[in-house]
Amino acid sequence: MTLCRGSVFIGLFTLNVFAQPLEEPLHFQAPTLVAEAGTWVAVLDKQALVCQLVDLASCLRNLPLSLQHQTALSAINIRQSMGLKSAMVLVVEHESIAGIIIVQAEREPKSQTGSLGLNTYGIELVNQAQLSLWHELGHLHTIGLQGKVLPLILSDYQHEWLADVYVFWRLGQTKQLHLAWQQLHRRNLAVIHDSDNLSHWSAPQLQFLLQQYDQHILATGVNYVDFITEVYPRLPNYSDRDMAEFSSLIQRTFGAGVVQPLPNYMFWRQPSLAAILQPTLSYLMGENAAQTWLSQHFIPAYNL
Image 1 (tube, one colour):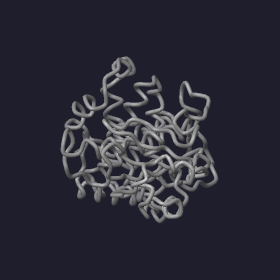
Image 2 (cartoon, one colour):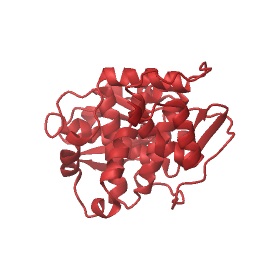
Image 3 (cartoon, helix red, strand yellow):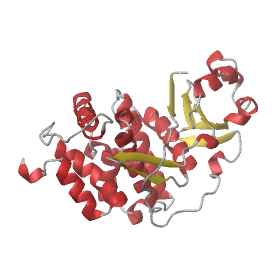
């Protein structure tokens, strides 16, 4: 085993304001890929085994004996690593198996929230079990493409937003692209709630993709390797320093101890952060209220 990744369950608190559901919401149905233990799914030229945590021991028996005998892949060790995560991927070294994805759908968050001043806003998360599964599959695709169409060395943050790029592609393939807006709003609200969630902040990349690709283009059957080969060089790709500055600005803007705005704080980062947050704030607050809030907390780009 070489890597362990997961989507950590985010605790929620009392809502003062709750946004309306996204347009064209889908009624939740148990996603096909997680409906049964021991499901195999394609990952490039390999496969991944999808296991529900409740059926973990029996599911792991689908693995070749050479993998079953690895201590790190025992049911006990996997359960300890899983903790409260809703989904987790384990990468393995094998000629035909890319990894194992473990899911416990009951741990999936039903909503995501974030506070703006005295108000707490939130969105319902529709089909989140499916999106989380695709996110973990995205990790395996990214690892399989490193040193090929993707750089050999990627940061943990790049791995996370690339996993959501895969989610975007899958949503386009299945004609559910409106749920990419849900993923964008979720990631924005998560960093508003806690700047530590910048580790999974794919909103900049999702925003770019939503501006460049529509449902018609993605539903034509373009394969993922061709898609990521085309889009990766064009996607926002922030350095560690960039992310440290975003983190500082987000903490100063949304942190619990903030008592008044500092209009010039990290002024060079303000326009880009405001542009990325704007669709989410407009969805939650309405266009006029969002513009008012942004003008009170950020310097407009044309003032720089």
